[in-house]
Length: 172
Image 1: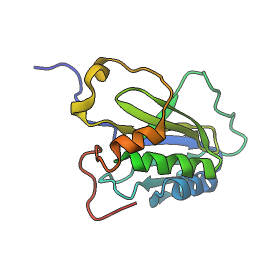
Image 2 (image 1 turned 60 degrees about the horizontal axis):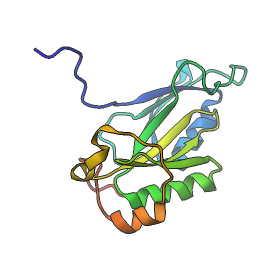
Image 3 (image 1 turned 90 degrees about the vertical axis):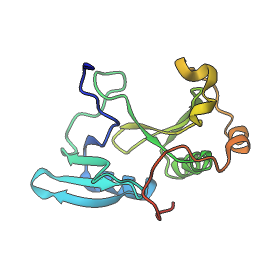
Image 4 (image 1 turned 120 degrees about the vertical axis):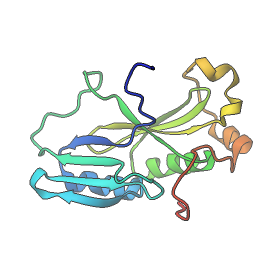
């Protein structure tokens, strides 16, 4: 018998935010999420990505503007990583984040290509695209942090889908 719990993937994340309405606006406008449930007694909202099969992908709990800000390098969550299906979607994500004033950088980790940003509360996130599994090669057991040449990656990988099963019939 194998040891450990054995989950198959992260189902959702939950964030504390200063202002629930501001955070909702950010995630619905920038990520295209939809609010699927609210819990007013907890000042909470639960959001789902359009192509997700989850009940919700992100929970937001408002704690009020007087809460201390997130401190980079402190104990706790560093960032969330959201996977896109194609390298073309990663390129669109970079543009969307830049237009929203939320873009903070990009890198190549070999098997994954990433752009980074932060929400209005300073919660950092990564938007990433993964190479097809059969193309990981030397990256199977490494995770470099290299410069991302996104135009070259788009030229090489345009249209290649790698996110696996997503809800059919919903496009972005």
